Length: 223
Image 1 (tube, rainbow, N blue to C red):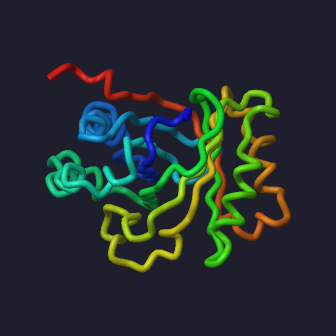
Image 2 (cartoon, rainbow, N blue to C red):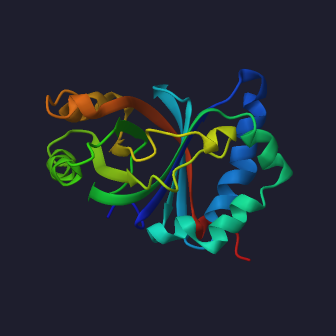
């Protein structure tokens, strides 16, 4: 599969411009490396919005879905650094999806990412997954490298902010990901889902993001 592993942590948030420089410094100098170092985490990718909200998006792939509820990951969440606590407290409009990667087609990862958030019907998950499997095919689409489906676990998909205790109707949402060579290639590929009459009522949001950087476990300093 073009995405390594079977689990995916998706986080997305806004941050006030007053704190944005420190937020980016923290992500780039501490947070990404800290997360990728956790046992079972494989790689991370960090994005900024070209056209979409929230402004920042990160994807963390894990060897198995179970890693995202493992003792190692729970320990990391319970022992955040002071710098992490300061920045997490400033998150706005946070989305946090703890998901299974159920579809991944193509080869490789692109410099741009399209993301479509869908809310599956209570009794139609299998039909929706089958329909998306047909649509998430990069072969006939110029500039599209790979396409994927993430299915959130509703019990684990909670923000790290004070909103975590609130009921979230989107905790069980799915995300279709479109890896592209350039942001200009995303709209045509996304339209296959967004403009599909049967799927349109299920779509919550969509956006296009540019890759800032990525980090794999093999990039970390040897301990």
